[in-house]
Image (cartoon, rainbow, N blue to C red; front, side, top):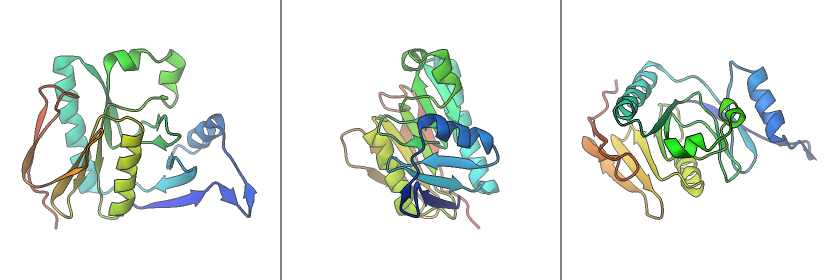
Length: 196
């Protein structure tokens, strides 16, 4: 997905958006996908192409099917923006939150941008994503106490695994991934991505 960033400082005059102003910016522009980094930079993302969208949907279905059987939490699509504890506002391609943590939020918090870090996130590098930028986003998740993250990189036929308090692990495809203690019993067999 192609993204461009817009600093919140314009012409040396600081334009700080409150959380409510950022929320209204997003709601008033429903055709835009907007994130905000922990540094206060607005990030506008273009829609993804067919391959990336299909892969993303498959991963959401896989996690969703596991969650329907276990009823351990809530699964979220890439349209869900999370207000992370470190100040960033991010939309993972797929996310999961353990049920008791989700239920600890008020109804209003659930209806807006939930002020909580997911327990698990998936990011899928699209053809136009800058790898370093996506790796920085994954680190931002870890800095916000996301417990497990997978970043799929079809171009290099790899997956990067992020865990709390550990260096990232890079695996070549095909591989089998485990939800470990975060998604107990969940496994995902990842074949090589077919890219034209």
